[in-house]
Length: 79
Image (tube, rainbow, N blue to C red; front, side):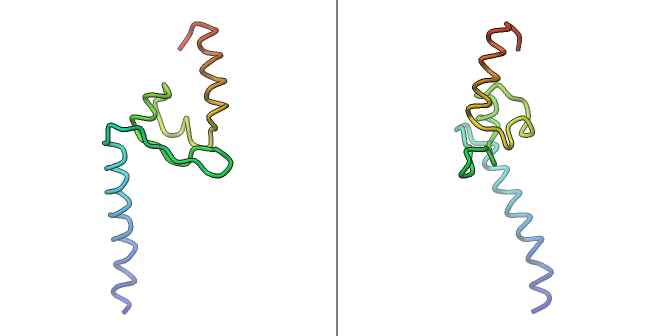
C-alpha cells in the first residue's frame, strides 16, 4: 500500500528520536564503537565522563586518541 510507504519514514524518524532521547537521558554511560574502535554513538553521561561537551568531539575518535589528548591537557595544566 502506497500510504504505508509514505508513513514509514515518519514512523522511523519518530522512533529514532524516541530512542535518542532515551539514550541521552539515562544516567548510565552508553557508547557504541565500530570494528575499528571509533565511537559512533554516545550519550550525555559518557560525554561528561570523557570531559567533552558535544557529540562532534567524540564521533570517529578512538579511545586511544582521546586518552592521548587528555594526557596532553593534564600535562599542560589546562582544560
